Length: 151
Image (tube, rainbow, N blue to C red):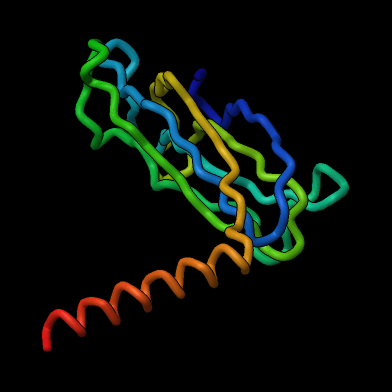
């Protein structure tokens, strides 16, 4: 991604409130165009309302933390660092927007550009209440068997 003010790529997915968005990407701080100053790279999830463009008023986005000039430099595939992000969609979200972003978001001015590879994103459904109840009953039964053996 080109550095400077800000640059991003994203893909938007339908999501229901309470579902979990889970994603990530491998990020490189290349020695031939190293991140410097306030230039950072991040892997984010933005929560988007039903109109398809307005961010959630409850939780606009979540971030995995920044890749910045402190990340070691590299040029080899083994130098990439996995950055993941996971979050639960707020009540006003209809979409999860998976975003790879770079920009001059920290003090120090722009410099350099992160490289991204092998990005992924998935929506994890909320377990059904009946499945959760069956799981709880199963655990209680196992606990009861363990107590019998202890006697």
